[in-house]
Length: 347
Image (cartoon, rainbow, N blue to C red; front, side, top):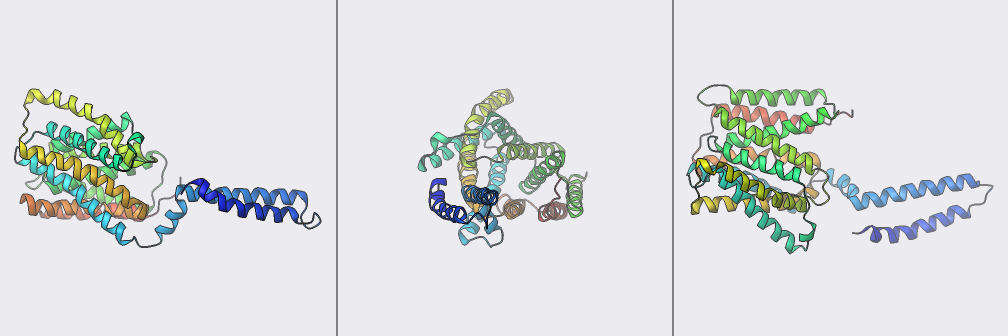
């Protein structure tokens, strides 16, 4: 609904009320009082139009109600798509059917095609936005993600990624002056302790090189999210970032080609599925679900992704869910839930 559509009926009501205010006799409402009444009404009217145009009223209303079945269905599909990224990447690299740099390039390239087609279907191809900063963060995430899965299991990788993203967001908030409550500090400390348990030396510990790469991927994705925060059209911004990231991914492939490349039919299929379906279509579904979720719910449901990934890794890849992974997952996800559930204090 446009501002004009909102404003026309509301404007008629406003004119009626203003006429009534002006008609009040001066002895009951002096000139200064009438002027103040007009200013107050105008301010209220403009705030109402602004909130209607930006969706603030809808956001306030929806935060106190349960999501609709459509929103729930879209959210489930989006979480499955996000988890599929880890499983598809691990599946391709574990079989040796593609190298990490080629996987990154094909994933981003197929994501560009899928997102462009989706925007074309809605007549928004001319609105492709994004930025080069977003594109660099996107390539950094995708490349580190792919190389990390040379050695990490799907579940451990997803847990490290999710933990790093949330740590980046919380740390950035602290740097910018946000003050955490006591429960949030407790949750943050518990999550860090869970991460330390996961990375402790031992037979069940993930390889340190892969863990550091995945942590870097999480930091890059957190930066990407912060760069894109406030975008008017998140899907168009994502499409623009994917398009800008394509030549950067090609440069990465050129730099790593000296170490050897590999690309067979199955690896190509996995990479295309990751880019077009799990990424391009997955982001589209997620952005369609977000208007029906409060901010806290939107953040909370994402905690299901590492769990879904670990279960899928067991079923599809034959990976084992160790006691260490289970305990660290409970600590990391529980700590993050405590941070999300508690309302931060204003700076």
